[in-house]
Structure formats: structure tokens, C-alpha cells
Image 1 (cartoon, helix red, strand yellow):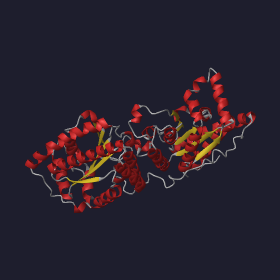
Image 2 (image 1 turned 90 degrees about the vertical axis):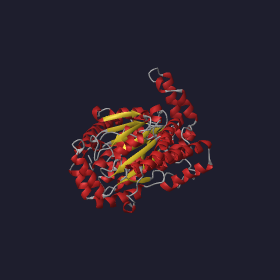
Image 3 (image 1 turned 180 degrees about the vertical axis):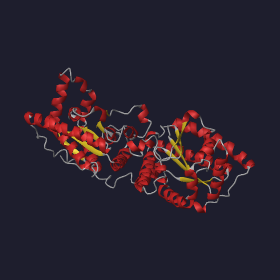
Image 4 (image 1 turned 120 degrees about the vertical axis):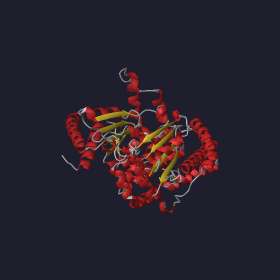
Length: 504
């Protein structure tokens, strides 16, 4: 691919002066339109060392309002040792631009595979990341600045001779030039694997600065125009735009083959909610389980394995009580409980998974979530905060996220706490009558109770589609609080022991 590019292409000064000003003016207009439409934009610059990334980024941002974009420089390897503590893609999720803003990347997540070419999984994670963002409305442009081996060597020498720029040329840059021919093959493979309709690569002939500048400006202008046009068509309910989006999902794995099947609730309805435990047995077993979990907490820390524990379930099912007993004897420096409420304005300005990547526990720590990312396919589905296309797509997106966490080394435990309607009513009434507990009950809880059949249908489908070998759902019969608390502790311990390869 790269060897077939004509690197002799040039643009003379007069032609450049004729074309570039109108492109810059149009780009400024489109930035304002994108901001007004709430359309987030990602522009990536990859390429050879000394290919002019910094110079061409500067040419791109000249006509832009600096309040509406941010330039990120991604260092090779780890960035502030983040990769040592969190999954590799986390730092890129953290810096995705909010809606209406532009994120410009001097190097990007492609460092993960450029620096470790044996990591094919990184390519899969990257494609998943870009597809999820695109389906959420992001416009993604990727530029690879191409220069020849001799041209690169000439530029490196020029930089090395200048005292003000010599610091940019290290032994690594010279080694990269020596390995140029091998790297060409790697770059070709990466581009072929990750060149998608939703995140296409543009190869830029970068020997001539004027030609490269105009090509980049023209590509960005046309991509923004197309993105705004599709956004407007979708707003109008255009059948064409909707069809193209649906095809994109099916081709790239965002939709599920089972999506058209009606699923009859079965798992939750067939539970034996009569399971219980005597208080004497509870008082004997609870402290032993808590002490075992405390020991495992230190084992997790030594092994640098994060543990993710998510709680979902019916209102008043006892999630808070289970979390309290789960953490009662843990070292507070090694865990964090994250209650998940409705997203605030800043969280809504990002992809719905953004805040959960942000809250992922550091290596060796435990993250506990009182409700979680599954809100997308539960409350957002039932209440209409996400349309059907969005919540159906979320099953695959969530599975991909959890798969990345698992491959990083995380232990993922997901609990669904279930109680019957009579027990829920009794607990609601108790909260109403007890001054110390009535803060726990709201009008929304009563309203959700009336909608339980819809929530149960959503929960059944959620568990069917997202209970995987690496992150299975554990259903907890929670009519009896004592039984539920012991089961949660026991299952969390079993999951940690299995992944650590330890048994008591």
C-alpha cells in the first residue's frame, strides 16, 4: 500500500494561496456548526518520525477557535505509568472529547500496536473503541503522514544539526530509520485491519508541506460536512441515514443475531426465593468469609489484579446491605464503592461507557458498583432514555468492555439481587414508617414498582446476552437478607480464588 503512493506530489505557491484560504474559512464555519450540533470530532495524526506532524497540526488549528479543541500528545509506551495500573485503552477513553468539541491527537492509541506489533488484540480493541464512538455520533478522521526512507534520513540530519531541535533526534529515531522497510509492512497491516468506513485512514504524501496541508484541510472539511449532513438526516428521520447506520452495526458486530426474537422471562420467575439462613449460622459464617476476603484483598494487591464487583437488582433488594458486609473488614485504602446515579451534564457529553472506564479500579484494587453500566439496558431502555438501536447495541459494547478488562487481568463479578413483589412491598412500607430509613424510598421507587414487568423483561434479556464465561451473572435469592449477604461474599471469594489460582 505505502510503496504505491506517489511522494512526488507538490502544490505550487500560487495554487496553494488560491485554495487554502477558502478551506480555512470553511473549516472555521464547520467548527461552529459542529459545536452547535453537539457533534464530537476526533482527528488523529500518525506517521513517520520527522514527517511533519506538529507542523501540519498547527496548519490545521490556525482557523479554529482554540476554546473548541484540544491537542493531545501521546508518548510512546506508557504515559505516566498508566498502563501499569489500568487497562491500556482507559487513558484514551479518558481523553475522548465531549460533544461539540474537537480532539486532535499527535500520535494516538495506535502506539499500542506500533510499539508492540505482536499485539493483535490491540487492533481488535482499537476497532471496537472507534466503532463504539462512531455509533455514538463521533466523527473520526485518521491521517498517516508518509515520507520515504531517504527523506526521513535527510530531515533527521537537518534536525540533528540545529541546536534548537537536536533534542528531538535520539538513538531511537535513527534505529527507526534503519528499520524503515520492516516498519512499512507493519504499518500496511495496521492500516488494512483498522481502515473502516466509520474511521477511515487518509494517507498523506508529506514530502511537500503545501500539498499535505491542503489535502488535510480538504479531508477534514468534507468529513465534517458529511457528518453534519448525516446528523441532520437522522434528526429528520431519513430512511436512508437510518438504513446506513443499521448496516454499519450489522457489519461490525454492533447488533445481535437474536435481536429479532421475543424473549420470554424465565430465569427470574423460576427462582426459589424461599432460600433462607438462620441467624446463628449467619453469625458464624459471616466473619469467617469476611476475613477470607480480607486476606484475598492483599493477594490481589500483590498480584496487581483489579477486581470489579457490580450490583444490580430490584429496588429494595438489599444491595446496600450486601455491599456493607462485603467491605466491612476490607482495608479501606484498597477499595472504592461507586454509586451509579443518572449521568450529570458532563457525563452525558461523553459516550455512556466513559464514566465507567474512568472509575475502573487501579491494579490490585477493588471497585464496587452500586448499579452500573447495565443501566443502559435497564432503566434507559425501560424509561426511553436510550432508543432501541442504542440499547440493543449496548449488549455488544458492554461485552467488549468487560472482555478488555478481563484480558487485562481483572476479576469481574456481577450480582443480580432478586426479591418477590410481596417482600418488596413490605420493605417499602418499612422504609416509609422508619424515620431512619425513609430517605431510601422515593416516588420513583413506587413508580418503578408499577413498571416491574418491563424491568423484568429487560433484566432477563440483559442476563441472556451479557452473561459470559469471563463475566457471568450470579443471581442472588434475596428475600432473606442473611442468606443473600453470605452468598454474595461466598461467590466473590470463589471468583477471586479461581483467578488467583488459590484455594483455601
